[in-house]
Amino acid sequence: MPAPTAGSESRPASPAGARPADPGNAALWPTPSQELLLRAAVMRGPAALEAWRRWKSRHDLVESELDHGSYRLLPLVYKNVSALGAGEPHLLRLKGIYRYWWCSNQNLFYNGAILLQRLHAAGIRTMLLKGASTSALYYEDMGVRPMADVDVLVPFEQVHAAVDCLARLGWRAASGSIDEEIRYRHSTPMVNDAGREFDLHWHSLRECLRADSDAGFWRRSVPVAMLHAETRGLAPADALLHTVVHGMRWNEEPTIRWIADAMTILHAAEDRIDWEALVREACDRRVQLRLVQGLGYLRRTFEAPIPPAAWARLVAARPSRTERLEYRYLAVRSDRLKRDQVAHLGPMLLIEYLRVCSGWSLRRKLAELPAFLRYRLRGRTEPTIVAARRVARWLGLAAPGRSPADSRGRSS
Amino acid sequence: MQGDRVYRINRPRVIFENIEGELILVNMEKGCYFSTDQVGADIWGLIETGHSQSDILEALRFRYEGDAAEMAQVVAAFLKLLEREELVVPDSASQASGARRTAAENRRSPFRAPDLQKYTDMRDMLLLDPVHDVEAAGWPVPKVEESWPSADAES
Image (cartoon, rainbow over all chains, first blue to last red; front, side, top):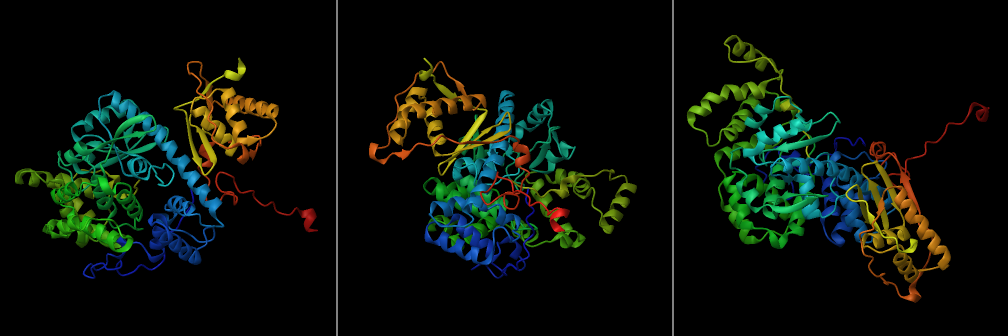
């Protein structure tokens, strides 16, 4: 694999037209160069060509060190730009990048299809999320969207059966302890002895962990095939919601791929998006603020086709206080140093726990808080946390151990 | 009769995609990657739609200009190569459909024997950086390392 570098380019204080009241959210948004490449990848006609030419005037495909986000857009840029008949000295190299990702993705799909068939044979329903679903249903092209793994959602009520089935097939949770993952998270990476990996989801979004959170997603799901395995994928409105909410999260490097995914869904399924369902799901799931911020950016910057009536309904709904706090702490810039500060970590964990215990009784919320904190703070080495853990252990509240939960950062 | 042999694509093991006239094929079980040109892609498309060997030949005669005997020989050899690489398998159950005659006589291109490039280890190929470890032709053609001048040459 190539070794793209973290983007060193300075980011704008906020995207064009973004609310200046969002201090420090710059790392959520693409850099100017990434934005040019995104335009080359998703815009239609002359706007794409103009962006590509401007990007080329600043970068050399071979000599420049590209950040991961930009690198992963190149297959889509190839498809878009070559379709416009642009003369391009590096077109063969770009085509090679497309071929590379087509092969790499097919490798994932081939093994993913076998996995799906085994799960189906055990009576477990499945749905594809993220790259595999978006590629098949909306890009309709298996080479334009680089993927590191496939993401498979199973119904929450079938997750234990799925884990048992996977264990019989030689799969295990990378974290080693799946029960806590199921209780406090939405997914976990699964690995086998052949070194293969996929993400098993029992909830589609980490913000929505109620047993019935995905009922609407399942009900509206659409058929999709992963090579020879028939499964389900997210309907257009749900795919758009999932893409934006999952992508609108602070990362060391902005996860700009969500922008290309969302624009592709909007273009490919413009007439099939159930905007009513989108607004309702966003409000029910309390992710409306992030959706508004994301779609607002797409409207301003990429002329995303969002009906004015749907937009008006979306922005009219007032996000809850928890959602606003969550946006402030989880979505805005919170680099490693800041994340490791106890003053930042405390509110982050509180907000996360509010999501985890949504729908629980007050008694259960209080009773399960220590176990949640043990899970989330395991392996943390900040002096205050280490000291607190010693006190908790002395009081008999904490158990030694380690969780890799904090080290996750992959996405597909 | 040999000329009426029908092949089918060795699904689901074989996955393929046509990228602007270049057909890429992967045998997932063997981990081999193949690439072929326009003529090869045309033959593949005719196999995919259930044409027999003689129908394929007839269709190619409408699309390409060339010596009929030579074309028959080349097509037979190419089909055998595809079969040897387990990209296609003989299909005795299928009924051959009629040849597609899609090109006008006066617009035929000169016939050239199809080229089938083979790369045997996809796992190794996917370790290549498709931007920097490849020739200008793009992945999967690996960059040929420049050799250092020998001591004799330096002196």
